[in-house]
Length: 333
Image (cartoon, rainbow, N blue to C red; front, side, top):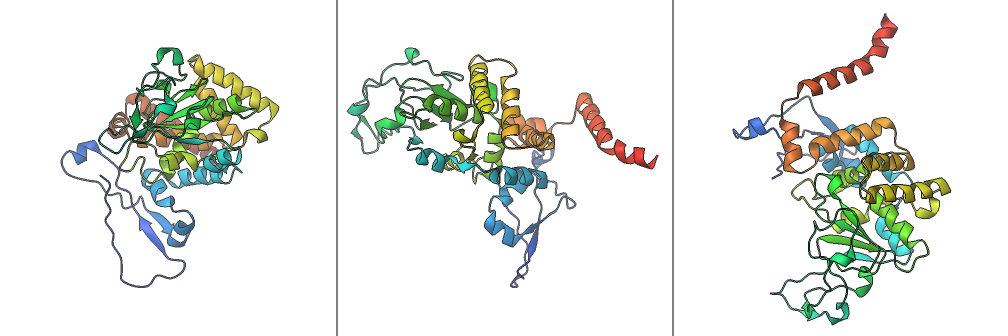
């Protein structure tokens, strides 16, 4: 589990005080022997005053670099609205799914009878087929939730997203459906653009831009938890649907169709769409991909991050480094 070694002088800091922050990265070969590696040259100077305004800085530097911080700041300055506020301003509802907890005090759940019920988090990939579900029949629940959060059209975002977006990190439901606490549901029922809204949010949940922001700013995900909490989702700065151009709206509908059809390039095109929407540069997207490829909090990713680089990876690194340095050497002859 995460831990902290803190060295300090017992003295009142000056207003511009900064601390030296060093992150100990996982290294399986060393950790298996009960050893760690501290890279004293990998130091970030962190302004304590700045962390009052941006408390997520500590987490971002623990998993990423100053480049990741730039990306998060760009998202926060993009003009997006926290998803929670956006959904509430539209008069729409959202919430965590129902809880059974049979040993806890139960309340009546008869008002939910007859609604198709999702009982497994791996039943579908991207789209809920209500025809394959049984109807809800339980008499009681610990927390049944309000009936309105189960009304279509819906996006059901998985609490445990997994490491592979191709297996689906969120489901689209175009008919009423019940879901358990392992999902965060957003209903657009009654809105004139309801289906477009949920398709848009469904795409966003499958973008690397979305996952990078949650990983770098969530207090728990990637620290001591492997699940996403409602607050992590609700604080994401979403660009309002009303601000998208006609071309961008057509793109959302096209990309949604591609994702539901499991087309190979759908995820890459989704990333390209949100990169443009949030005015991110190719370098920003490279930072996002690099960080997710080695810091995503799943065993397969951490094992890959600790492994010795392959010949192909070394060659790619050399070519990338050469591309960065060549203009300087060319100028010097």
